[in-house]
Image (cartoon, rainbow over all chains, first blue to last red; front, side, top):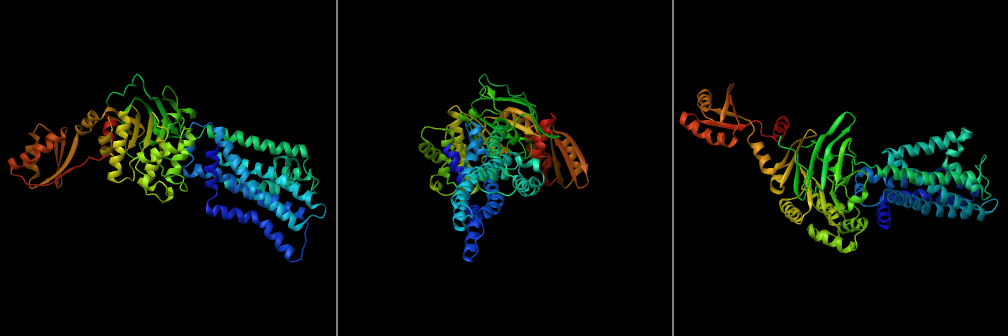
Length: 236
Length: 312
């Protein structure tokens, strides 16, 4: 598994993508510092909810998740992994572990620093721990889902963006019964389980955990299934 | 068409009535053959279906009909077969951020070989890439990339090697080196199949040949017999001379010619014996007192050769 993790990580951390990811993950920290320096003190819970859970985390997971295997399929380098005597589930799980891990490494420190800089109106430590755990699991679920999506389609970036902006941003807020189909709502539900006050009726802890686990396991199974049927593109 | 190559008793690769289509497009059409140790050339023009056939054999495409067997078992959805199979794909894409040595080492580690560092170093040395081994592949020329890809395919010393247009981008020295290498590997008992659209490459390297045209197997077997078929097919020449009518009349008396037609400004000659005709023409012209201005074969492209083989 290590060579798979190694090559995936090196592929993901190209100079331009690294800069983009660090800038994106650093955005909440930058804004928090800016607000504090200008004398304001908004509640960390609101900022982490709006800026990290709803915006930065899904975008970072989208960039990392779709690049973990999708870019290799697109540029043709995936073939060097597919012609090896390795069970495809190991390739799939390696890609998901790297994408989820990298998302967590980028997001969790941003949550901790942003929470510490702004502080909570209730309990700063609860906010930091709650959002860190929720973002660790939620970010992993997002990344896994986007890895799976990119195994199925070359338009994963576009479809992933549509899911985040349209489905999660608009529809799952309007249609109450569809909340359990939203990784964001499950992430917020998990944060709420730590005592964080999230807007609207959050999913229960059990439902949130079940949703996130189903997404993680389902993404791994779907990616494995698809890679087992991998067909090369191009050629005459 | 020559007799389809019968699978050897111990065929390393067996393609059994395989077709592959994409929607309404048939890329490979009911092809059967078997391959054993030695070098086989997969010859055909661009777009003939060579890569599709190689990808089917490499387990990277599912046959729409028929079956592909590698060492007796299906090639499709059987990753464990890659312990004995190496593939050099045509696409240039290689992880550009890795050095040549790192790429070979990655392949060795993914193959699970006992000593990946040693295997990678040996493979790099075998393909004559030692000097550039520590440079990122992104900085390589096309020929160097081909050699890096070959090194990656050789690290586990596969019994079967599939190469898709392996000589693309190589200079003559590199080409010669790779041909020598592939020949020595075949002599050691390996089954090697390489695709090419260049007749001379196949002629220089392959013991046997599979000719593919428009998704069909046009000819298969010993290279020399197929070369003869290609040479002895009906040919058409366009000849311009000082007296086309007299030349046409004189040529019709020659046994190598079976048709001569006066067309405005030249005479079109049809012959079934390429060599005999090209030897006879100057003598016939001299005897008839006719000066030759231009002699040009009109159907000597590989396309027309392949098309002829399919029609036979």
